[in-house]
Amino acid sequence: MQIFSENSDSSVEYIHHVVEGETVDFIQAKDIAKELALKKCNSPMILSWKNGITGEFYPTFECGKTKKPAWIHYAEARGANLTIDINNGQYIFMILKI
Image (cartoon, rainbow, N blue to C red; front, side, top):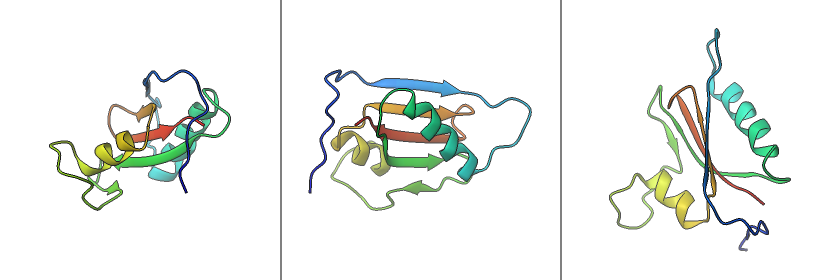
């Protein structure tokens, strides 16, 4: 099954969001990213993410032959058009606005 964005705006957006005064864990960062994405579209789909603190990322498998990290290539190849950066790279989410 393929999912396509119905959003006619094909531009890629990048949101930088800083949470002041508190430590943010992955679950909190994911919830923040969803909340921010919902301001941009009705049904955001997280395609990939990276935890900049631990180095963990998803998906963890190689996706094509490219110099980009697999998680970035995977999301871009599937139409990611919104990237949300929480706390200057601590958490990064690549999203398809649907």
